[in-house]
Length: 258
Image 1: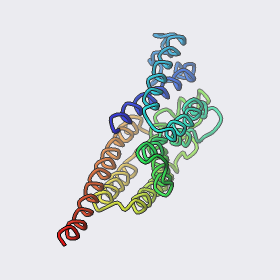
Image 2 (image 1 turned 180 degrees about the vertical axis):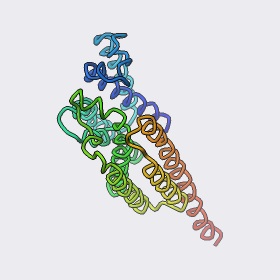
Image 3 (image 1 turned 90 degrees about the vertical axis):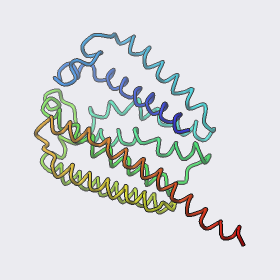
């Protein structure tokens, strides 16, 4: 199941990037960092990108059809977000929020794929944590392009927060950590999980404290360092569940011996 979700995540995020490049090809031509993207540079045609997108979505559908009916419907519900989120930068200063709602749908889908439905007391806090995390790293990412964005006329949280960015990022990080703790408590997580959450908190604090929003190269470095957050959380969940199983066996063994 983990491999299936890994493939599905790559396909759907890839599809989202394809759609984003299709919607933004005219904007990308005017931004130095994105001018060399295949569509913007004219290396591939719009028709070719449609064909490629069709392939991505078809393979993603094959993955989705391997799941239960509840999960199929839940997964299909995310398609509207995947299609529309690239447009949000044209109409709101909060496109990163819509991106978070889109990218973290797997927090809901993963649980339902295993259990057959969502345990909302766990899934919603986990989903919220993912959304807050996306707001952190994608706001940092957006600071790379803020000068070009002003010229082109697109919006972002980087332009909305300006010099108050670090305060906002701190608030999002705190909300993320509290949500992770709530999700953990509601599914009886154990010490390794909370240790990972604490390590994530330390990483985010250092990231925000040392961030220079006026240096694109530093913004990229901080954005890329968020892979560490994902690795820490994954390890914490795996070890936390193994610890939980060990505790369950320790409780059951004396009863069997008796």
